[in-house]
Image (cartoon, rainbow, N blue to C red; front, side, top):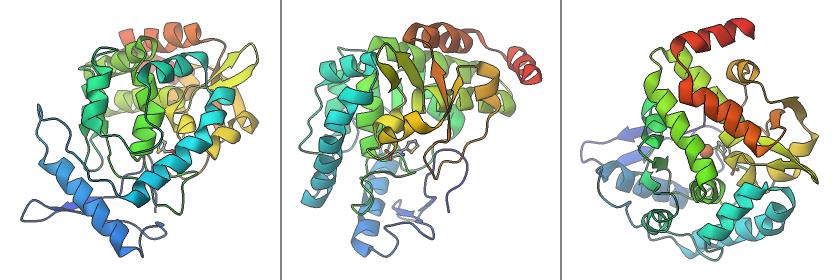
Length: 294
Ligand code: TIH
Ligand code: FE2
């Protein structure tokens, strides 16, 4: 059911502009009509959003707030143990509520004085170039639905918990947003689809699933680890390779499981120098040369 790339259920736009989300075989919400109706309503609100509008208000239900509380409570201690310093600083600055699902528009207001980043709502899969390109304008495309209550610990679908608890706390710290902006600029600069794919794989193995050595052990800085109470407990036991652009940009991954291969930076400044430096300057030619070296 889940394909390569971050998993998004396909959407179908109907004649009246409303959206139907096509949950596939094996999706935990497939046989849950209430959940499906919810997904359709939230995706429809995003589809009707126009650039410049605030993100739509979602009337989250008690059950959705409860999933948020369960995941945030579970992650509370785990972040202290397994999240890198820079993420914890961002989390403190951001001050996310742990007792209810926040609205994207209020989070954008909170981010404005910190880093200037703002969320914009995604109905479904945003084409790679738009998704990454928006980062250059400090815009972050985000889903607003909540994962199904039966799978709180891990979902291959980016949901609002992932966008906000995983990415939001990093969007609150300039050391991270400099990296997001650089990735956005790179996505706009490169021309071929192959080069864009390389840029997106480096993003996957860093800002989504990166880990970094600190004096007291291996820590996570990737949003995909930091939003999953299940995966955050397992990442230290995976195959840990040293940070290497050619390796990251050419390694395949499976989005449906915990990541079995992770790339560890020796320090946060190595991420800034090597990954930030790559995104700041990469071109189709420099990426082609890295692929030859891989
Ligand atoms: N697996 C993450 C979670 O359970 O929070 C969500 C995603 C990360 C990356 C893609 S989807
Ligand atoms: Fe993500």
